[in-house]
Amino acid sequence: MANQESSQTISTLQQELEQTRLAYQMAVEMHQFKSGFLARVSHELRSPLNGLIGMHQLILSDLCDDPAEERDFLGQANQSALNLMQLLDLILDVARLEHGSRQMQLQPLKLGQILQEVYNLTHLQARDRNIRLKLLPIQEDIYVQADPKWLQQTLVSLLDTSIRLTPEGTISLSATVQPETEQVTICIEAPYAASLWSEPAQILSTQALPTAPNTPAALSPGLALLMHQSVIERMQGRLEIIALPSEPDSNANPTDATESTRIQCLMPLVMPETDLA
Image (cartoon, rainbow, N blue to C red):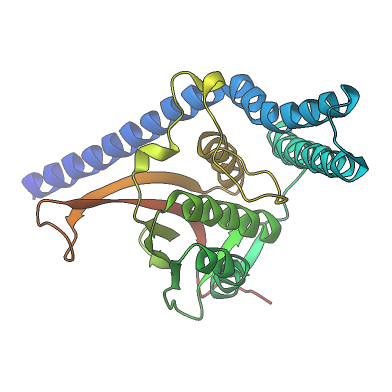
């Protein structure tokens, strides 16, 4: 009997130690991200600001061949200004959440409905890039505790970035329930290297991901990850980027392998017995 109790105590201590280790690792990673927040924000704002200044300099230097070209430059300058405003609004919204001046509206949400809306908002973009976006079926009665606007916006942004990072192949969106931890794991799996989410060492000298003309500005993966982690934490969740083991390509040389990434968003599960009325 004493041996059994001792084994249970050791097992409990090992679990607590592992949980503490994971919590410490996540805290270190978040500190590293937040320590460079100002540099990342400055980097994000430089691209649309440079575009705005550049177009105005061309016009002020009388380098336009005709009024039509001048109008085109003005249109590009206006788009850069709109992109700049969009980035500022998003950054300020997340900052207000961190500061506490804006509160989230946490409530039970039917996860299947949220994921279907996310799929509807992103599948055309994936198709335009010849990428297959696959939504795997999930249970009808899965509910998570989250803010509907922020959860949908975060998942759309994560998928949008994954689509831009994926050269070809299939991206899958799925969810699994973990009753023992009272959590739901929302997964995005895509065939690209997880290292693409990491910030480069010389952040101010790097280029942002390319975007199509006349489209809203997109955050770089590094700043997007920082902001999404912050948002998910405000909903008592956790966001992780995991590098999956490389798998050989059946249509290519057996020694070749495709790198893959799993984005895991762990959200609080609303148990079935909870009153959702």
